[in-house]
Amino acid sequence: MMRLIPLLLAMSLLSGCAGVVVVGAVGGAVVANDERSFRTQLDDTNADFEIASALSKHEDLQNQTNITGVVMNGNTLLIGQSPNSMLRDKAIRVVKELQLGGKLFNQIRIGNPTSFTTRSNDAWITTKVKTRMLNTDDLDVTRVKVITENGEVFLLGLIDKSQANLAVDVARNTAGVRKVVKVFEYTN
Image (cartoon, rainbow, N blue to C red; front, side, top):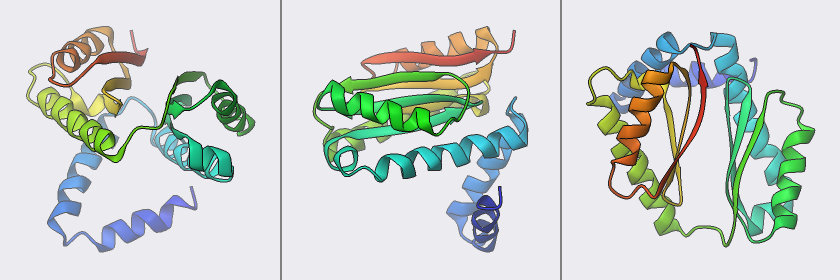
């Protein structure tokens, strides 16, 4: 938590920037509507950074793979590409050694790391999915985290099944989405 305080303070000092105001407003709505406690949200964010830091300490993982960890409600989703199972398994071991608790969902694909163009397209797909969710009646987009990796959309959140089904339907029907993977925890 102490590491996050300077970041939050710095962001508040930049509040005059329009982009930060918009991000702050949306971020505030997400924090307020999230089923997770504020402490859990902070722990998840810190765990994301811990994973990135731990993976970056291994030169072979840094140079030969494209692996990202995302933590939601204490559970970890690993996504990306590894050229072989040996490096994939090493990345999983590195993350397990952090002892973050919760479940570990391995969605690392064996293959060459994606190109900059593919990653840019993934960012565009994520934007399209989030925008469509925002414009969908009866869907609380603040409860759904959307991550796209090589055309696969991963949906995370702590939500009820009807909201999850609606989010999946929106994602599946968005241009460019090859596959939708649910990593939800259900409230009911």
